[in-house]
Image 1: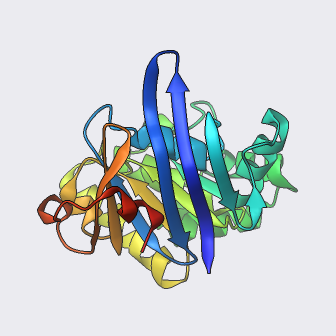
Image 2: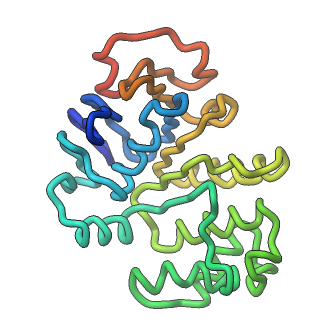
Length: 236
């Protein structure tokens, strides 16, 4: 069963074609990586999947719901209810504690539950840092707060944009271990990354070039995957 289906997705900014007729399926419970050089379209794909942008043409179906024709307010609701976003830059509110940053996501979704938010922090090993402000946390700890925030509303899909991009090697391992645990528990994960060693954790890697799918590899090192034709865009 597919949690996400992209059909004929194109995105045009003025005279620039950022994406050209992308077809892609993501199965329920799959871990997918999206790679590509700067300007390849990977961030645009992430923004469209995450309801942060709309395609110029094509169809996006998330958890059985067509998204392409929805209004900005409706897309905000989908993002709030179905998508857990993990950002490279963390985007934590500087004057709120780790616990309060997680509770903000609850506030916009339903009801604030401090006990549940604390449990989410405990899940990523930060229960003892709940009362700390972002400036009192390391980069790795801030990223783990982001993960707890992304999980608090039990999303249908987790989208991670360069989740280890600002981390040292030790904290990268911690974050990847958390993602592995989430995947074992059945979470669907889509990671945008420039790092082959991060993409290698995924079950499948889609490599974008010039706004099109250049190749798809199942596991292993995506840099060694053979080129495939445009028909590969239909998923596994």
